[in-house]
Image (cartoon, rainbow, N blue to C red; front, side, top):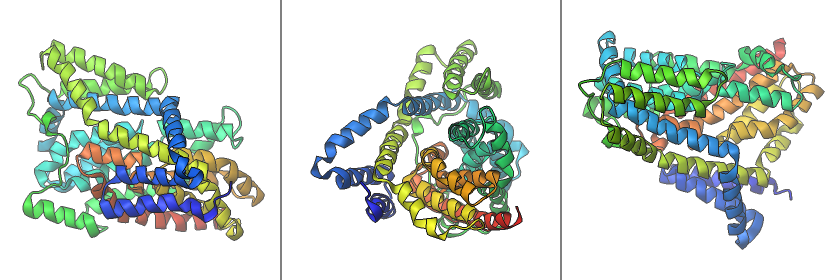
Length: 447
């Protein structure tokens, strides 16, 4: 059934409720319920139950929930074992103030590029003890982390994003079998939004781009009152034990990265073996008793429960939007205005809007690809440019959305409210999006 403009109602409701209540989980759940109400009337509960069960049974969903939950345990070990604190103590003398601490956060985010989940949680949890010393709001920390997490992962072919999108390109016939990564690499110069998002961060840090809106208010609050906007579980925030050294930070991180990459990129394997290595190292160094190590793993897992609930609600909401035909409606709406010159920028804007409103980035791209690339072929538009436009839209949606997984995890890692992080970083995401739109028009004229 074609629901037309009615398909916009659930996402509009989610945005309105999120802005009004500042509660993202409840807003997303309400949006999903309304979508099923539109499709099934008062029998919506049957489909809601079925879709929720199917989402939980999906292998990809289970993978994401396991990875995020276990990252919580891994980070809890680093924090309570004193690794994050020891790293901060080692780094602090090398920094000269707020700007250098934020720049160090940005640079660390550029290095940990394998996955945005790993990036958001690890960098935020590691650097907040450093940035806190200079009265940096957690909103600013979350912005720096989020603006290097998804954008950086999208620009690196061996990241989880690169592998996924390269596979999609092959499955949709855009790239020949085995050539998905090659086309992905060819498209990197045209991924204007992630490139700009990363460049904007140091410009904001050094004041070239001024603080505005909620970010300005958050930084003024932090500097004038000392209120950093901290919202997190304080049971893990302890001083380093007497046996804690830099090795209790660097060795677990190195093990996590090694087992994630070798022999192939697998985040779940990496975090499982990273936790095992950390437990062994901490036991040998007598950082904590074995029972306390296991208790810390459980506490870390518990700290991720709100995030896991949010992710599950988001996945159900995405399925609801897919069923109601939101993506198809938006693309059909812009088709009459398409020309060879405008196609890349219109696709960027349209898919950005869908990714932003639904909180889905990977799912939206999977739905859009079978529609977008036949259009690109019909208008004879450069394929790498179209790949860049589509993936830039995915990145912007993930970065800017109030309730996307990237936003949620960056706020969790930095220890601030999801809404506060989303609303404070939105102006800077929009700066990148506006500039990217202009570059897509210029590129289409030149290629």
